[in-house]
Image (tube, rainbow, N blue to C red; front, top):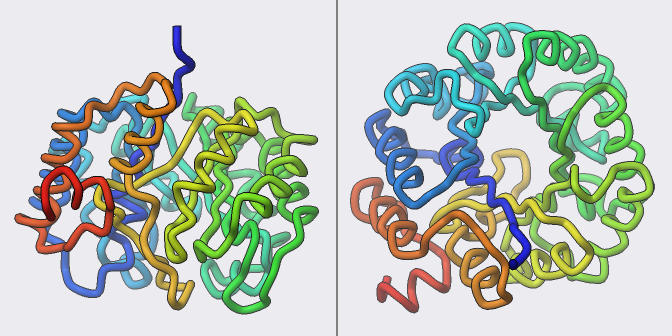
Amino acid sequence: MSEHVAIVEVGPRDGLQARKDPVATTARIGLVEHLRRAGARRIEVGSFVSPRAVPRMADTAEVMAATGSRGRDGDMVLVASERGLDQALENGARAIAVFTAASDAFAEKNIGRTVAESLARFRPLVAKARDAGVFVRGYVSTITDCPYSGRIAPHPVSEVSRALRDMGCGEISLGETLGKATPARIAAVVEAVARHVPLTELAAHFHDTYGMGIANVAEALRLGIRTVDAAAGGLGGCPFAPGASGNVATEDVLYLLQGEGYDCEISMEPLLDAVAFIERDMGIRPTSRVYKALRGG
């Protein structure tokens, strides 16, 4: 039997949070429904954060209610505070994510705290979530480059990852936020982190600004990571990372996985239908190569 690789579809949250134009609640609901039809089992459906800071996620409770996310183990929401966690629990979330960085400058710009301060804030939050039986993922952004302080060495990434695991995060997603890294730099980070966090608890989260997304995913797979974050159509971009483009496209990742003989629960044709929905109904032009090749987008 072929090895299984899990794709975490982050388009409905990470892919849409930085959009300048409003995104209709019906469109967000439609996207989640299309992704479910494609076979996506793990979907980041939204976040419970300040609507002033991230207005595109203000309707997450409505999206959860309409898409059957309440009580669904595979669906995840990002939270940034105890209030956000309480909202997630009230809306039946069974998995949450917390977010920090390997760079103080980025963490301060994004969440208003240093890395150490963010970790201190998240410890009781993670404990409360786990006491409620909720799975917790920890995001570490800027694993190779920070838009404010430049290159990031592997050591601080490994230290932050270890701290997140020690506080109770069951999965650590390593985020290459700027999309600048090449496979050799990804390998250095993964090897450093793997000294403290088992590969089975790591996820690869890469952006595609320089066209390196798929190459870096392939390297993560070679190193033993078996969970990959991706966004249908290449949705994404970070409001706190000037110049960064979208996430690596789910359909591009799926094409790689299928070609290399990995097993994945997502099916290509209904996934491309989801991308077509993004283009037609949401008015967002997909950036993925596979969609352009197979659907002429």
